[in-house]
Image 1 (tube, rainbow, N blue to C red):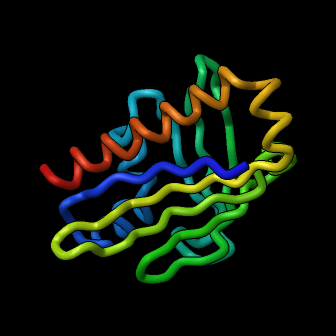
Image 2: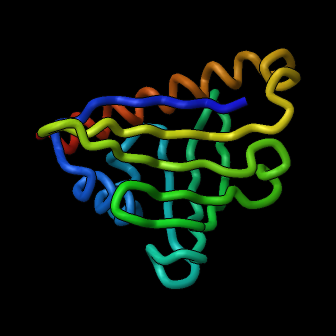
Length: 143
């Protein structure tokens, strides 16, 4: 199963990716359920690890992401254990459209059908959180 959310933002891909690569400074402003964010290793480089804490469906989640690709339009990452058991990777992708940019967030899940049955409420809460992050990023970058 792949969860995907997208939103059109009136800005450039470079501004979106720069904002995301400086997440330690921007994380709490991105969503009210975000708690903490820090880098291990050389920040913003392939191989570095981003640790975050955020509330989803009312529960605090501590997650780690290893950057696997950074270029002018995309940031890709592997999600580290234990979450990697069900969700091994994700990405942020920007798609220029004239003066705007389509910002796309993707999360890839294992056992999608089973997860959608067993954890329907949690999956819906995650979809809502992803949509809110996109809306908030649009508001922040267009201000």
